[in-house]
Image 1 (cartoon, rainbow, N blue to C red):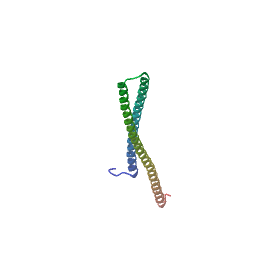
Image 2 (cartoon, helix red, strand yellow):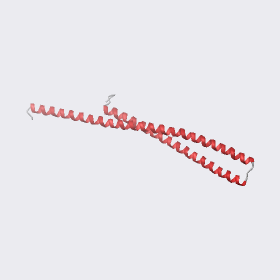
Image 3 (tube, rainbow, N blue to C red):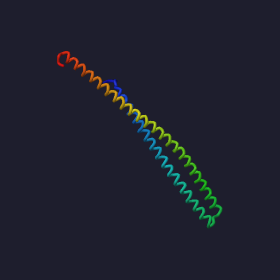
Image 4 (cartoon, rainbow, N blue to C red):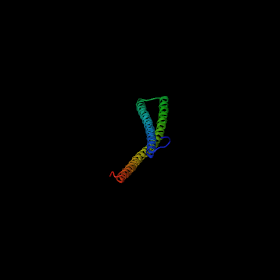
Length: 151
């Protein structure tokens, strides 16, 4: 066959490349979603920790605390608040990445579907052409047979 590729083979190759790209985009989307979920869980833990310490602070305040304890609580709350805000910003970035990956996957998926449909169409056209060619050959053989006295 050499370097010659039929139209169907070319479309099949394009379809396979598109499927590969779609699979890759799907894996990248899955990874982005996993990362987002992990970081979402981290934020949940941080806010839970913050709520737990706020309750401890309120309980300690009810029984009384000295200035050093108050300062320690405030410093710790500040650190937790900064960590929570940082985590929220991380989630915003990861959310954007998930959206970007999802859009890319949709594009790749649609391209794969379009190429699959085009391949089916090319295969149908090829079948019609082959049927016409075979019918023509059969008609020619029938014509030759009748001229030779066979028909």
